Length: 157
Image (cartoon, rainbow, N blue to C red; front, top):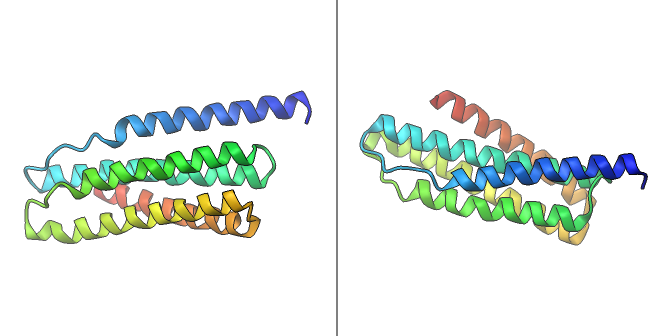
């Protein structure tokens, strides 16, 4: 590995870690909802945080597939992204929808958060097994979920 490749790997690692730390810092910032507007804001925040975790996981696994980072690095990043999803799910799930018309939003967001957590789990397993086909499938699934999360949070904004 030449110095240029090492420099790029270091910059990628730094960017991923900075993004991950920022997302972890905001993942617990969901306030109680007193009305439907506040509930939608909570949903938007949860979706935005999950989007960051999905994109971080996909980026890290793709970097591994491209030979730009080590398996140990990707394992750490994906595991931390997966771990960050738990508090996001818990925080959003602990807020009761203020009205019956918000129940569908709760179910939809909850399902997307759960699907993202499952995809990150699958990515972690594939990385630990050094299963390249599984990693490619994980990148595709995390990208697909990332697009859904992005569209959903934009629709609520």
